Amino acid sequence: MEKIVSAGIIDSWFKKLKENLTVDAAIAGGGPSGLVAAYLLAKKGVKVALFERKLAPGGGMWGGAMMFNEIVVQKEALHLLDEFGIGYTGYARGFYSVDSVHASSALIYHATKAGAIIFNCVSIEDVVFKNNKVNGLVINWAPVHREGMHVDPLVIMSKTVLDATGHDCEVARTVERKNNVRLNTVSGTVIGERSLSADEAEQTTIENTREIFPGLFVSGMAANGVSGSWRMGPVFGGMLLSGEKVARLMAEQL
Image 1 (cartoon, rainbow, N blue to C red):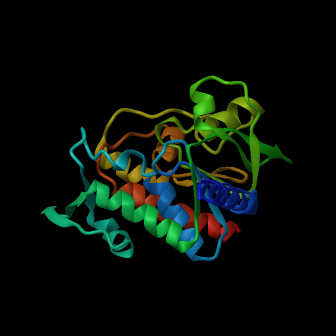
Image 2 (image 1 turned 90 degrees about the horizontal axis):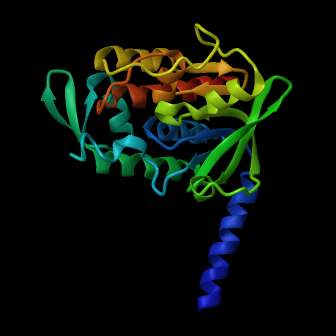
């Protein structure tokens, strides 16, 4: 029995990895915008692989605010809550409270149910850069990075790449730093996140969701970080709508 269990896990996991060495859309980061994008792309028949460095996808949504596991979503994003079967309660005019554990688990379930493949405990350490275009992700185990081990990575080739890594916008920073290129921002660089201004941040999160370099898109807090906009705290309507917008943009390109 012990051998069967181990062999089953190993054979199944390596089959999954081999089948996703080449994809249509590679998503770095499994927060709310990345998960929404993965779900909507997969629903359209796009081959999607999402890479999350933590054990559990969901980003900052799990913890709500200060570990009070509730978040707030505006009315503009209610259609997405309905799409994912996420319950909500009216709190103030135009604002709704949502259980963050319920919401996070629903996003993960529906993304994978639609056909997106999620690889957890995986970090992005570089991109594949050919013909002045981002053509994939260079991946390694998250513990390898955490321990500072010198272990060579593997490569995922992809027609489109999404940086949904949150506040640090790690993929965009890597592309800019390593390749001496100008990004589609005011300065041509990763400008960096500003302090909290919830109403402005919610609007600009959606506005800044776009392709910032050939083959490379940004969503969620990575979109605001790249473009020098604000953070918003535990209100998540903009994050969900950003994922919806970037899925449409990536699908159009594909």
